[in-house]
Structures are given as structure tokens and as C-alpha cells.
Image (tube, rainbow over all chains, first blue to last red; front, top):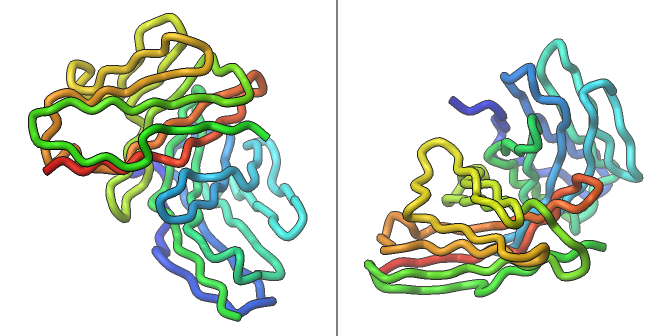
Length: 110
Length: 114
């Protein structure tokens, strides 16, 4: 049973527009959520995170929103740039362990 | 920033042989390292948690006798896939946790067993 779900395997947006990547989770014990960016044949790189006690965290063009009641989080990238094209993984943490979603491949078209 | 390296980045081996993958934290000490496996179009799955100087903790369904983990120092953990089979072909990624509990990932090792 997958505890972290990214239901959209891919997303395509135009440069300059907003990219919204979604993630749902089932385990209410998760206390920390993270987004990672991954290029092919490379390890994930940390992008942004949010504690379960917050509902929003912003870092430059990246904002993560957390809706605990819906067990849903989203990553907003605005404005999107071609260099943002990558696979984005949502991860949730409990007891120091990370549980990853399957990822969403984002393509930003010039 | 914190850097984690893995070696080799790509390895091909014959069925029945063993392969060792190294994970190093280059500019920080990591008391805890994690090993993940990723199959194509799947999520990263945690295989085991490696603590320096003690036995690794394996996730359910991961054979500890097949995937030998050694964390001999604060900067090095190794994963040995013993008696590899084609179904072990995967992308193996390690991460190292620093004192702030941030996890930094290595670039991964692509294992192909023929």
C-alpha cells in the first residue's frame, strides 16, 4: 500500500507560467514533508520542505502548501523555467525514515 | 554544501557474482546513512538504515544476507549485493544524514546483472 502518492506521472507547462505538483499521503503520523528534484542517472536533490505544524513554506520561486485535513501537499513553482524540467519526488518523514512518491516528470517548454 | 559520492556509478556483473557499492560523505560526518533502491518509474524504496559502528536495520522484505551493509566509519558505508540475480538490477541510491538531520543523496549506482 503506497503511503505517498503522486497521481500525475507527468506535467507540461509553458515557461513563465506556474507549475503545480501534487502529492497525497495516507499516514497521519508523517511529521515532515519534503520535495526533491531528480535528473536522470542522478540522486535526488533537496528542494524545499515543510513541517506538519505549518501550512506554507516559501523559498524563492518555490512554495510548498500543506493541507493536513486533506492529507495533501503541493509544490508551486512560479515562474517556471526550462531548467526546472526534471522529475519531482514528494517524500514524507516519520521516525527519520523517508517514504517517497513515484515522482512527477515536469517539462517546462520555452 | 554537503556532498555524497557513490562508487561505482554504473556496474554490470554476471549472475551469481557479488557487487560492492560504496557511499561516502565527502565533507561531513554521517552517523547514519540510508540505502534506497529505485526500479524504473517507481519511487525510491528504503532498503536499510546504516548506523556507524552497529548493525544495519533492514526494512521488511529486504534480505539482510543478500544485501550486506557495512558502515565502518563516519564517512563510508558499503552495500554488497551477494549472489546477484537479474531481478536485482536496479538503481541503488544512498543518502547520508548530517548533524542537522538533513539527508543528502548520492548520485546513485546503476546495477545491471546479466
